[in-house]
Length: 253
Image (cartoon, rainbow, N blue to C red; front, side, top):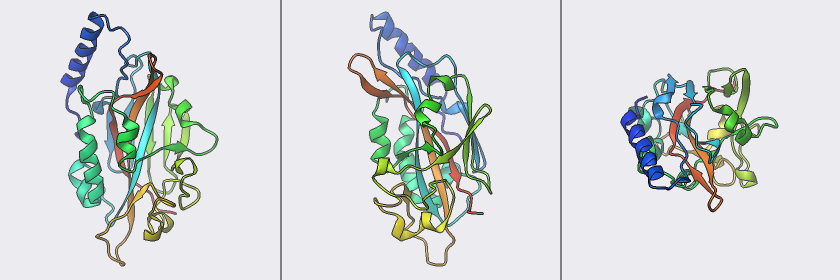
């Protein structure tokens, strides 16, 4: 998927930081993003995220992944930008709002929590007792993340020899997702209209254009951003985001 605005912007961003350092601003709080060009997507089921080992500042603490699920009536095999509106109009609207921040060298240190949460996005989590903030901490630098949404198994994220099953958010207890296992699997409790509200499936977007006889498919858009601490005031700072992929959720088998 071509959403990269080119390596020139990264060079300009690096030059900008060099100028700041030359002017004596040594502790400018900046978190380097993952360039969109370092992410590759395959059809609608797999993505690879390459994370550099030498492009993170001392302010960096971990990565976060924002996601939102979209109901559709087509199992689109190629989830490229041109197909977003066909999949779900809200998917296209959300992407168009987020796109200017991807690979930007001017829209830096924007509050990504506010940007994504205002559009209904939630934080990705992991099954079991795994803390995703720790899994995606500094130890992940220099590694590759592989996201697999292939059929007949729960979607996963792999880092080297470690594989983690992805889990939907419950908003820290603010809503109660259905189905209760919270895995990224297409099923009636996930897309049922009466479940799409702030109390149950607050992470799901319906599709008003679907009829009662239409098939229901679901897609998950995932974005990744770096997080860090501004040591001068201990506030949270973010990198610009990158789109991991828009995945088709596998059906319940």
